[in-house]
Image (cartoon, rainbow, N blue to C red):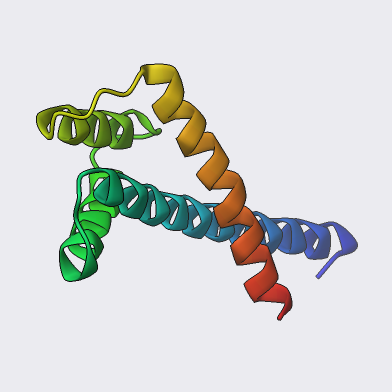
Length: 109
């Protein structure tokens, strides 16, 4: 195997590892977002955990965050909770940072 092949294989492994990490971070963010929204809707315990799982699953509908945004926004509005697009997207961004920090800490620990 040549040096080029070694570098290519290392790059591919690193890329796959980064993609897996990003996937896990997004799933964690979606769970945290689901728990946050569940609390706003007055859900607790098993009901909150079940709702958080629904939010995680909603992310598989399409590429990007729009499917998650629509789910949470729609559910909050259906529960009579008004939240602006800016507020919800800000919460999504904030929780993405929290999820990334948690996952990084778990990998190191």
